Length: 402
Image (cartoon, rainbow, N blue to C red; front, side):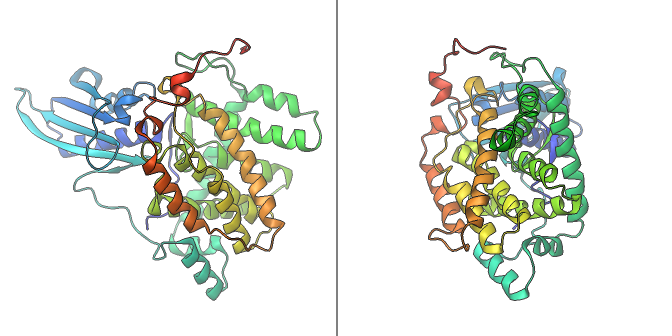
């Protein structure tokens, strides 16, 4: 199973599948065909259906060169391995074909590229049940299990946390409207201003919402965020961690350990199911992010290993069936608000789990399997094609104000 270092990737939004992945594919293709004078790029399935709103063409031409790259869009066709498929072709100065490759962007900025060496697989356990059994036998916490298997993980998480904090800070300061046809106003700074004098649950939820909105709005504007597990779901984990770091005055080392716990949840979902909205809907993105954040929160407030598992299970279970239906192909409606709601649900899941002894009927591993099956059963219109759901029925609400 691939590791946590491969899960958390700092990068530019708005979509890891549609920007980070295609950009990585273009970079690898350019390395393979450095003599290419012109390039043909064909985008299929979800990459084509929502690629313009997700800035896929810009991500590719930034690598291959705008003047020597042509892009064709095939939203109604899919390549066999994944809904996010692309075909790249290189030609010499005389337009002779030098070679072509079919590449897949499989979620979180990861790609399947012919001949590309696989990322290291430092984890021998492939289910959370197996991880919990091992940790109980060795009497080690979950975060230490991850640290032992990935040398350099703590340093990577330190860098990840710095990027996350800066994403929140920039998002809380930014004002105006987000790019794209929706002209959606940024709201994070307003939300934070309104809760400064609040008390109790209003203050706590308001801070969570503001932090999640800050990162999600930064992502929608093409700012730098961390895939957690994707760009579209990047607001959930940092919002929850920042909330606990501030309210409990936690040292950074505690946050790094919580990120490791969250990362374990993320890589298990990625390995056993999918974190790609084009493959399983938003349950694989925001649902996984909620499970990650719930596990991190449960760890931070003193949960046992079993209580952490329970929190993660609830975070994912109660997102089952969630569709991916971005309006106008932008990572804005319903994506931004969805991050805020998932942050709150993550905290609720953690608190709920800690009221129990950690025992429950449905395991996290069962929910991961269910999520994958559910996602594969979703109609294509509900898997990041903007062909159904809110993307089809949306009309501007007259009460919306900047």
